[in-house]
Image 1: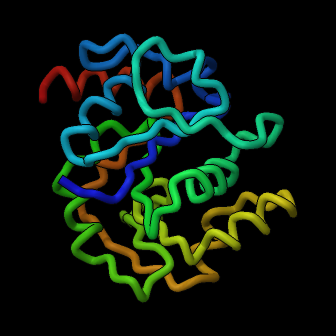
Image 2: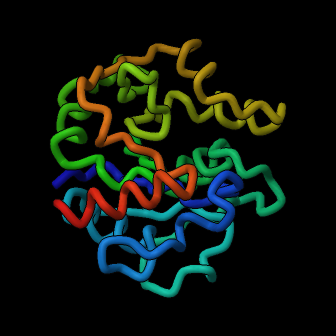
Length: 193
């Protein structure tokens, strides 16, 4: 098990899905968020759910409610909150809508990570996966500045700092459930797991 805190980002708007994807049923769980929390708790000693309002969830978990409730739906505020509240040297982050990232991919990211990097991020032929990787406390100031300026471009931050990319040939583990058809596809995949 990894002692690095794992943060599940579940504070997004879900505008493309048309409903809160964190609350969609998944793999025998009432919600995708609960599924992610349960499975990642078998890999990490501490798992947190980054969100705007923990009251929308009906299960017990470690919740990190955004320090600025009126802030944007971008993950920037979640990073600021997590670094401030957890006081950790590094965080592993995963979006709630990527349920197929397994311990295998996570292990590869940790094996590639070193203290000299600001972040170690998954990448596929479709591009970087900014919400699947390890972020170091060296970025705490960057996130605060981004939040103050209303700049929420994670991709740009990762280009500007010392980022290690880990390239994965398989794209299925990084399937994002952004649209209803992707959710339906994920339900089919999980049934065959």
